[in-house]
Image (cartoon, rainbow, N blue to C red):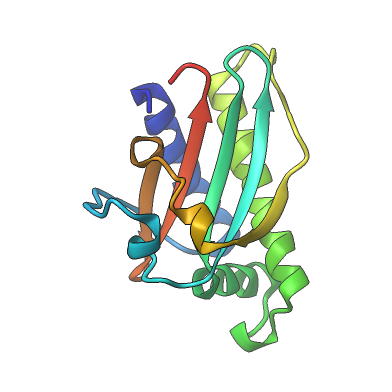
Amino acid sequence: MQERFKKSLKAVISDVFETMFFLFPQPLEEESDSLRELVNGQRCVAGHISLLGAEACELRILVPVDLGVKMAANFLGKEDAGVEESELFDVIMETANMVGGNLLNDLDPSGAKSISVPGAQWLCPKDMDTVIKDRMIVFDVDGIPFVVVLETEAM
């Protein structure tokens, strides 16, 4: 991943997680070659959004369920046990939207790019094996790792 993308993405992730969820992610230099190994086999939800235009990008945020529930609970002002699956997906999509929008503002101040509608889905184990290590940044929140993947034409 190009250094300018990586630097911007780390700053945006920190800002969004601190502001929206009162969580403080720390970038990790993770040695694991396998995303499945990294998240310890936990079920994950993936939020995604595309930045459209020259140097188009796809941003994916891969979050273990335990962390996703904590994010949703903090965002919605609920107890963890009270978070519904639909709320989890809504919060993950809004996370992708906020990260994508802030990344867009940072990387494209001219406004030449646009942004797609965010989506979210369960990430099955076989999909975890397709994540390319040099396109991901691993973060840790309270001992729970999550992964951000940025795939660009410029890579």
